Length: 102
Image (tube, rainbow, N blue to C red; front, side):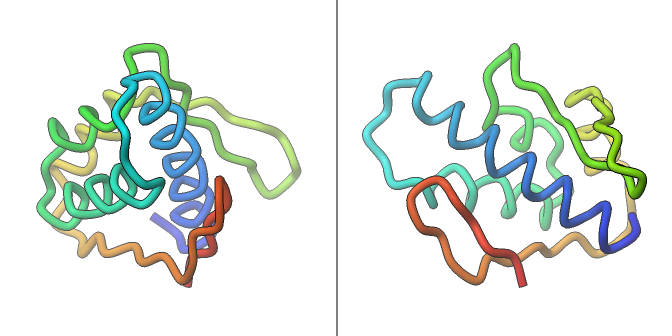
């Protein structure tokens, strides 16, 4: 994935992970599901990645022209499982519901 798309996916995934955390009612820090998400990406474990989201989670990204594109979470999880690319996203900081990626 191009770096800009990777960043947008990361931002969308982080947002969805936070929503997932609130719906599951588990007392945890905002970083917990995000770390699990990135660990799943590094391990190419699409099943674990998908487990960080609710069944109704949306995966969206902004295209260069400003249009919003929706993607299927199961397809993204499948990509993570099948790709041989090195997937290693890192967060610089998490503050409340905002994350900064480096």
